[in-house]
Length: 73
Image 1 (tube, rainbow, N blue to C red):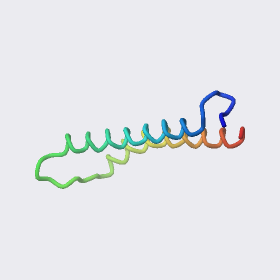
Image 2 (image 1 turned 180 degrees about the vertical axis):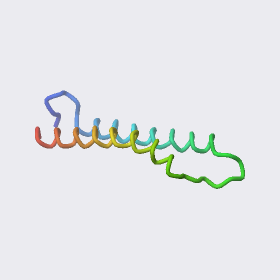
Image 3 (image 1 turned 30 degrees about the horizontal axis):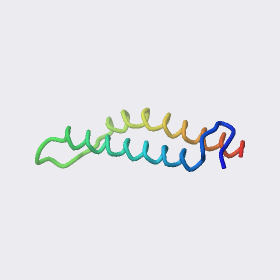
Image 4 (image 1 turned 90 degrees about the horizontal axis):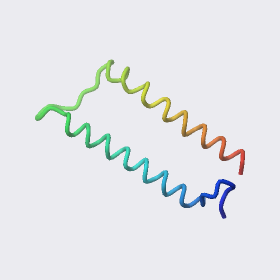
């Protein structure tokens, strides 16, 4: 059960899941290290201005891959 690229589907899913887990862990560690002590974590309008250009290309790339993969299968 492998696709034409030679990567087994289960291996690709494990690789993708591990990558997502590491990304989330890295973001959480960065937030924890950069958060001021004894202060609640707050986001204002400028936080979303920074977050949106980072998240949109990642989501678009993943959606493109899902659509492309589902049409080939």
